[in-house]
Length: 235
Ligand SMILES: *Cc1c(COP(=O)(O)O)cnc(C)c1O
Image (cartoon, rainbow, N blue to C red; front, side):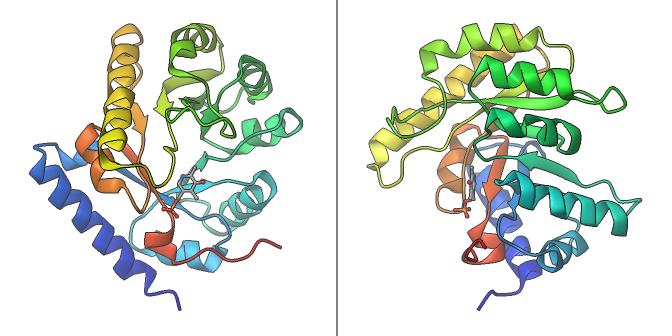
């Protein structure tokens, strides 16, 4: 059922190049994150063979099993693991000790715990603040007006580096609203970047909206289905 993962990655890279060209952006400024939730180490390995080294996971336990597996089997290959799911405070230690990035910061308490629990031997955890750009009541993320307060507090944490913002826009909105929201994300990102020079990441765009996101200025697209096929059931 899943098409060849290598072929899919090749195709996504082509889409990145084409879109970048159309909107006069440097394609090297757009990072492809392969979202591997529910996928096996074997499938991730197929992606690694193509030179894909950055992976996104949504569930702490499942992600850590894969991280440990690849640490054992590919000691010399430095994979970069992004935690992109909602995080409860009782699981912060596992993320602090194993992941390289977290995309879903929306409470100072969680950020503070992550910084405190980050092992000294590792470089600081890279963090993105999640913005609830579509103002959905059920979604995680902060409202745009709250960004600069939270950013100031997070920026002061010693073992967490604020790298930018991320959003999961509501599905199925009309094109005009969609563009507005993506442009609003870019504007927040640009303001944040002016204030904090280390900010360099706007995490926006998935399989269905990657072109719109790149046109709006995304620097990191999170692609699952278009690489690995439809998701497996979680056990
Ligand atoms: C699952 C997921 C993705 C990937 O979405 P696709 O539609 O499979 O490309 C991206 N970002 C987040 C936060 C996700 O949970």
